[in-house]
Length: 291
Ligand SMILES: Cc1ncc(COP(=O)(O)O)c(C=O)c1O
Image (cartoon, rainbow, N blue to C red; front, side, top):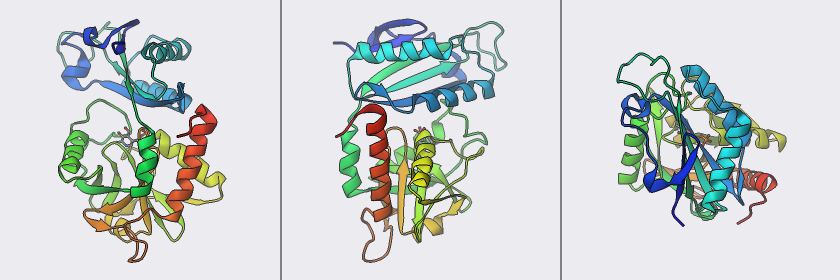
């Protein structure tokens, strides 16, 4: 069965799906997007993703002329048409197609596209055992990275640097503060306290981040939302990352150095294990999915 995509109300083969070359997403990165996990055919955390999408559209003044109900139906239709029980759905809304001009076009309707890709979530449970390595890169993004725009060039370059270094992710560091990963939220654990950068304009408010804060607090664990330095990360007991496509992964090496003390260093730690249990139980609660 060919892969199917959604373009402005139509579902069609991915190979035939396209936008005009003067789509403002292409020319200006004038577009926002969401990526959602689908497990067992159910979209995880759909409501928070919708809320974030609406907030981002409002921040940029992009008018998307489809209400939440029909949008949800279209997303579900595309998922069902592709027939993958485990996949990710990508949704992108640009300000529309118009003659190239920086200022907003008058009457161009927004362009909404969606694609679905099969995704192996079970690999994340295997990686929970091994942990992953990250490198650090300077955070040279613009001042509103809380808006999830398709203008991702600094993130792309940072991720490529990580790949070339044989690492899973790059943590973006501003001054001496760790902000977040190129496509993931960044966390450390010190003396039983779970620490992650506060929301605001300097990080993307991750849906997985938000969900984990809630789950951790419900389990009586201490979460601090405060900036932390690279030195703190290097001296942390444990470190990890979260995202839609990597719900929780232990970070066991930072710039080649093992995380944690000399006996437990470089291995998955107890708090990350506990948080992973909470995370995957929540996935099972919402979607029924178990590896
Ligand atoms: C820069 C950045 N930070 C964090 C995240 C994690 O966000 P979420 O948990 O919503 O996937 C992403 C996801 O793409 C991201 O691009």
